[in-house]
Length: 125
Image 1: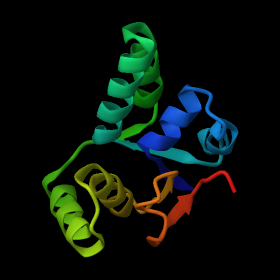
Image 2 (image 1 turned 90 degrees about the horizontal axis):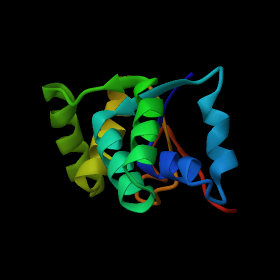
Image 3 (image 1 turned 30 degrees about the vertical axis):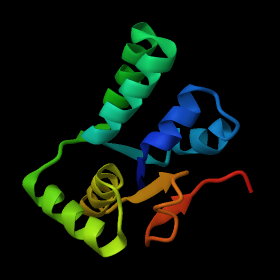
């Protein structure tokens, strides 16, 4: 099964947050991880700011071990349409559009995405 683990999930996992174990399930077989390039940006930036460059580089290495999908013209147009349709911020729209393009589910803790089709919402409940 293809999944896009969004930035909130990766950050929760890498910082050993309270929901880290819920996200860790998706880092193993049978899941095929897809990572939009915007997730690389968001995760690297946050980890570098909070934990330093060395940790951020190690984190980036883990993300690069997944199937990294670059922002193509078709994904950009799809993201714009998704953003307009659902009122999503740019990064959320790109993550969701990438998942649609790759026929994957989005695994997220982001409430802005929770009610969209093919989204697995991870929360404390």
